[in-house]
Image (cartoon, rainbow, N blue to C red; front, side, top):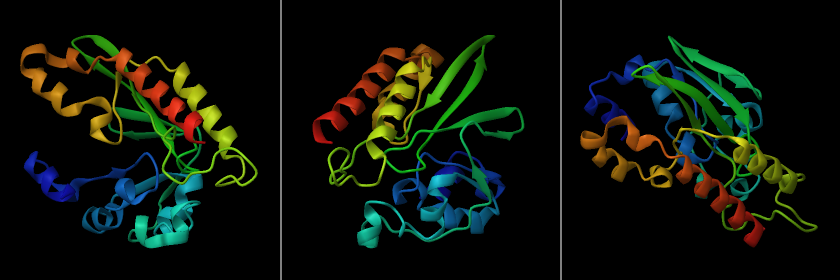
Length: 211
């Protein structure tokens, strides 16, 4: 599906140079093995999620116990990322920040774009989400330190003040509706600091209620 979508946009999937993601679950990493075979792209993953990407999800703190739920084809990681590392291709550079919780290696990406002479701060937040069955508080957490990880991640996200933000599920930032508005409104449809604040607050509230 990803390969077909890239072709539909007029690009060659074999030309992919670098692959990154938000975290190692199969809906965010499941296509890496296929696309790497296709393109030979360099796969860059935040260090705590490297093992689960390379073993197909078996070492995930939650889904590893029932591997078939979130299992995926294993793939070799070429570049191990750490907090603050940059990934650059041409004139595009993104900074990776370690924001664990949802997985140990959840990664928030930050970059800037320039349009019509104006600079926009762009954030791709990850790590603050809570899945059914996660145990955040109490004597039997899903992994040691998960509660503190969530606190740090939520605080980090709260401190960011992006002009634009994009999530790793398109419904997070209402992509379809915003895209439909673009012909009339242009790039301004993506400027949504209020939506970002609401998204971050919602993630934090959900963890507090269910943790």
